[in-house]
Image (cartoon, rainbow, N blue to C red; front, top):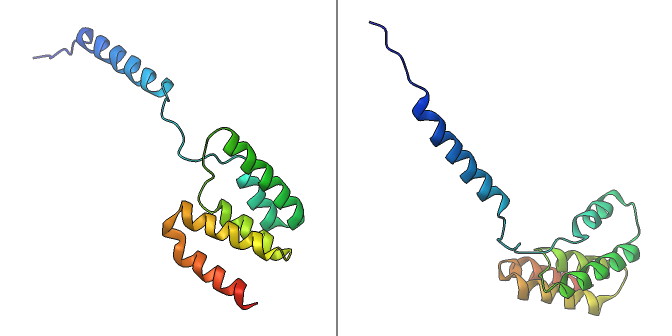
Length: 123
């Protein structure tokens, strides 16, 4: 006895599945949670020492203005990184403001931000 599998009934479900998946992939209406404008390249440049701290500060400040102009939020670590850059050039008041901004935006970073704030006050 030979059994023969019919492919007639398989075509329509495959086409329907393909259309459904394509439609879902093309419709990305979920807004991003954070705007990463310029942040990742600056972190890379920081670790590679490709630019000085002041140039990185300028780039991050510009990125922050662009992020806010679009009505978005900077990603986790943005204010902390900016605060550490400010501390490295002796701008202690600005570094404290950035550490506080990081704490406000991301309460889960409070322990680390408190550590950095305490360290900056002891120097």
